[in-house]
Amino acid sequence: MHNSATPLRPLSSPLVGGYKRGETRGARLPFRDATFATTLISLALHHYVEPEAVLDEAVRVTRSQLIILESAYRNRWERFGLERLDDWLNRHRHNGAMHVPLAFKGPQEWQQSFDMRQLRTVERRWLGSWWERAAA
Image (cartoon, rainbow, N blue to C red):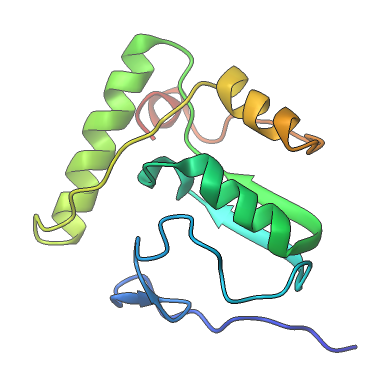
């Protein structure tokens, strides 16, 4: 069985999958339709101006299973916490140089994006303690 995969560099590297972080901005990835059996988007969609364009590309290059791990908020306090914590952590990790959009959504908004693409949600769960859910 042949598995196709794109080598990824560690997150500390300026390159991820051969691209500078944020470089693709949802543009067409250099892979054929249904290239990957499984695609993982981990805590990235909220960093794009147009997360739906990134989601569309993930759907296009995925043959079978698209796994999305994403921060979501249930109320305005959780959104406030997510925005502040994400901004602080990313600036800290990148010496104050990372200024990215924050397109956080609630679970219903993400579900609408998935429904529009005829994606079936197999499981949805909150991870971590109450504090992590409020601020992660």
